[in-house]
Image (cartoon, rainbow, N blue to C red; front, side):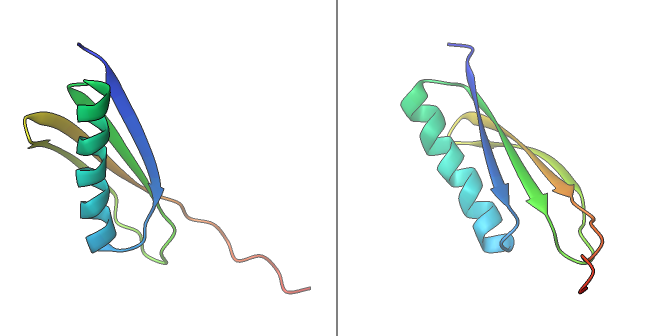
Length: 76
């Protein structure tokens, strides 16, 4: 009905990244939504940003992997 849903995660690896998109598709069906946004925050040492759009079971999933670069806290 023109509505959408958003799912937020922290990077846990490629397998979990892909599983999260499938999980979002299930939520979209339950909510009778046609599209969803999947936002993943990547805290790895060398994060790689991603922007993807795909169709899963006729639903549009827009995925964004956002690098989060922080300095290590001091050990004082």
